Amino acid sequence: MPSLLDTLHFDRGPWFLPILTVSILAVAGVAVLISRKPELIRKWRTWVLIAPAVGVPTVLGPGTTAAFAAALAVVAVIEYGRLVRLGRADTVVLIALAVGYPVAAWLRPSLLGLTPLLVLLCAVPAVLSGDVENGARRSAFTAFGSIWICWALAHLVLVWPAAFLVCFAVAATDVAAWCGGNGLRFMAWARRPISPLSPNKTLGGVVGALLGATAVLFLIGTVSVGLVLAIALGGLFGDLLESMLKRQARVKDAGDWLPGFGGLLDRIDSLLLALPLVYVLT
Image 1 (cartoon, rainbow, N blue to C red):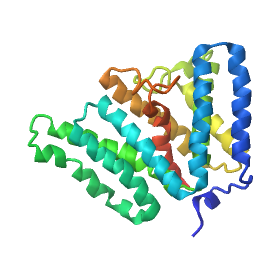
Image 2: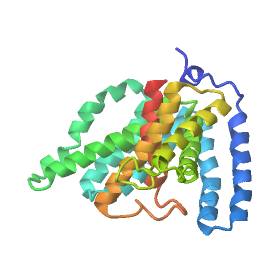
Image 3: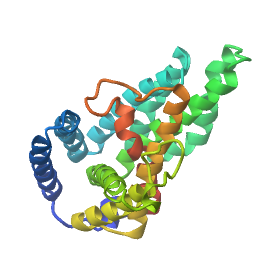
Image 4: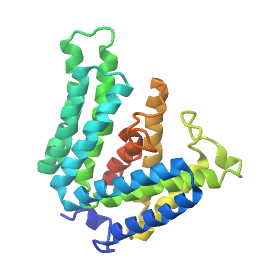
């Protein structure tokens, strides 16, 4: 059975993406230094650290990719638990699933067929504690987090060896969406927000994301309609999904330890919806 990488027709060679990543970071570094904007400089420094942190484990093999996905998921669900005010028992369930889903995707993907049952079992802590007042809310948020974060990040393993390719394309498309939103502001239609949740997510950003995803995937050598839609629209709506949760929690970011971005969840929100869509649409 062909791998996802074969399905994506990636034929640029094993060193193409690493070289392209280093080249883009170098050019971007010159640009941000010229701009002298502290926020852009902080983000660039963080990207310099993120690139090898993502690239090395996802290139080494499915086992290291599973470990990387589990590590991301554990940090993300802890941030998520604080964001939606989950209790300790509910957060522990999410941490267990954060590790369990990527490991299952690595060792026995058929176990992911149990996902609907595990979603229902997310209600166990609330049921056993007899939480009448807040049990439904706790169960719903725990179940949602188990899918949105734990199950979604397990797809890093399912799309291997194209995991770094997908991460690269999503990150590049995020930048293209920002450029489209700012570059097309002179047009009235481009300034229209696609949702009240985030005034900065505009129709211009959607155009930028679609064009950017197409250009990046063409450069990589794996462009297709399904992949463009998964990367561009998945990234945009994944970002809006987190914006909804942050608005409800009345916070700007899910964390404050990642310079220029906030928390880990703020950095990977675009990836969380794009990954499953890539797997399904390709």
